[in-house]
Image 1 (cartoon, rainbow, N blue to C red):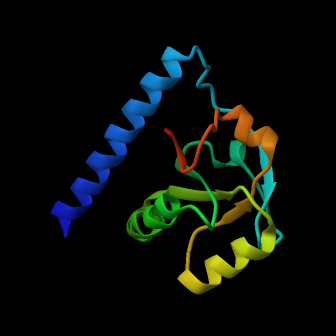
Image 2: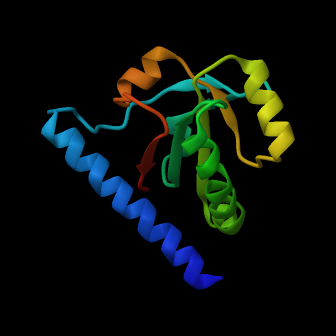
Amino acid sequence: MIKNLWKIVFILLIFFVVCKAKDQEQGKTTNNRDFTLTTIDNEEITLSKLKGKVVLIDFWTTWCPPCKNSIPVFTKLYNKFHEQGFIVLGIGLEEKTPLENYRNQHNIPYPILIGNKEVARAYGVQGIPHIVIIDK
């Protein structure tokens, strides 16, 4: 089990390094941009209120096969490390109803936020899935 977790962490690290290199090539800033978004449960989440925690932000949609494949990995990470302050935020880039249905069908335990173009643009989203890791 620990071996599998290390594999997952290694894959996420490689993905992050590749994305970071791509951002630097394109001259994008990687500054963390604050946002307040509403979850599919009508709760507001503000990123700056999570300061001091490690936050994984997953920009995704319900119709994206790679997005769907990554959700079980993020669920495992969330379940294992949430008590230690690890946060996963799924930012769905579509309407509330399909996000809500997908969350309910797949028992996603972490918050699903309803995204918008402004937040996606601020984080340089050009395709999905788009993962951002914010350190403490």
